[in-house]
Length: 154
Image 1 (cartoon, one colour):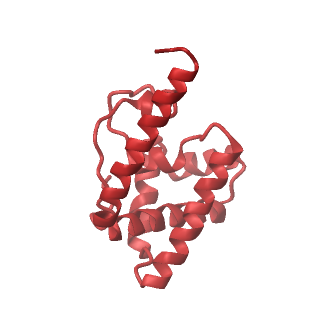
Image 2: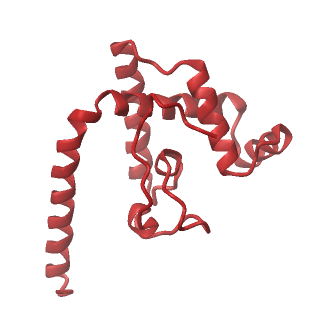
Image 3: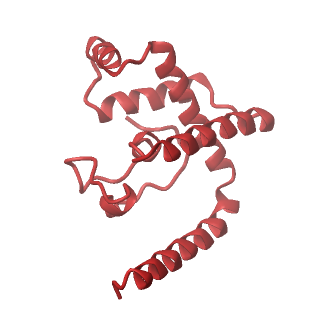
């Protein structure tokens, strides 16, 4: 399953423990981290979940404002990728999983549309994000280094 090219976010093989906040959330630790891994993985705290929901809300509003809201085939492709990554291509198995997860079909579809909006907006701002991401990485690394110094780990 391929996520539509318009989303065009980089997908590189990385250290999953680093990308998942220290928790390896998949047995397939050598497979590339996908956008869905990032958007749908547990965040470890309610604060992270709130920020992910806020990101999705802002991305939906920005996509609408820019006239680049994800189209139904894009949301459907993302949905198919989601099911494929979970090994739930069978509609009955997918519905069972939703029921066990306490999600309605409508709630799931809304989440997929939210994820698609994040990816569309990310692709739209790809060039502008590059410098900001590098700055953010430098800040995170410097903060982590300082926290290690304070904890006596260096």
